[in-house]
Image 1 (cartoon, one colour):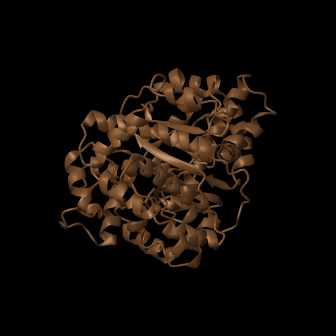
Image 2: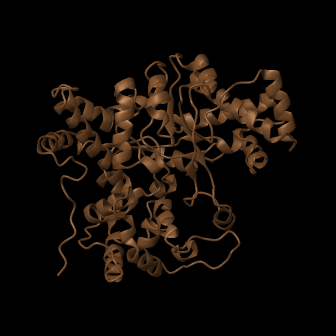
Image 3: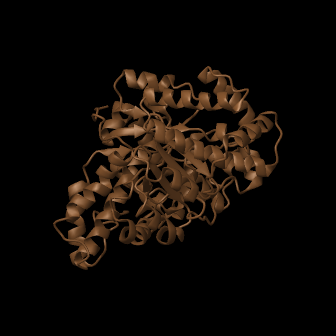
Length: 477
């Protein structure tokens, strides 16, 4: 008989007894704090509609690019995992068959953060007592289907069970926001985040039609550059009215430099007509990030900048399945020179806040920590994507705290589409940061009586203050 599958209560803690004991105590002080989720990709309609989460495959496998990526790397076709093809070709539609493939390959996630998250949510949230395998796939599927049919597993009930205090979604600048208006009217603490990439980056194939939709949504003409800026400001104001406190931007490089108004207007006219060279498109996108910073200094929306992902690296997968299926790869990034124009303009502005995320760990101690340790507007976002892991978090804290301190960090955000995994992701961060603090206490680098306050800051307080949620009254789901 197989041993019952359980969670190690000391997971993520150092095995050295003194550090482990202190880490336990620090973690216990923050383990049950509410979850502040200021950046993520859960669809607002999931909460608004409150429909059942569906079957185990559509909940845990198909939408999770961490899962799909690993299985694909071991030869499992994406069609067999239920991903829809752009050309209408055949993909698996039987959720039980998809689940069987996932369980048969569950061993691939050993030692990965995905494995840690999945185990936490399966054991803690869904009461699974056996490690998934080919042998028990059908029994686990039936168990999960039974749980998912219960009222306690509907999205709004889970909102409360997961302990979420506030959840921010990520929404295109051209989204209608009617779902968020419904949520706000019902008093649910779900906020939009303004994501304008499609309307400010003319290197994208969809830029021209996205700008046309921007005009429709804003009610402003976009035939010239001045109207285009008015349309962007109008949409930002609509997001603020729907509860937004932040914007989000993705870029390959950290190059952000403004153009003079005349040159920006001339470039916009060319690009809006479908003209312009690749270099002109790059320069305009860089300029528009600068303009987004200017607007954030005006309206107070916190600006998030995620840099260093070469999107859709695998051409064949992108052609067949589209974006966001796990084929994005980190690239080296330079920050100090690239951000100098922006930080000289707004880095000390009292109303401006910039949260930086990187996929280039080599820059954490060399560039990002010194920048955050000087500019009042700057905060460092937590380890992102490939580095949202136990060792990635430890490396991050090692690299930045000595130079930037704890209070120039942005706390934690889960950055996930996988709704049931949210608590698991926060739990890993709380455990790792408690263990890291315990190690510093035992080396005499942090006073023991200060460590609980720092653990709370990393788990909860910093996210609220960074994203300007401190004035928001927590609302029960």
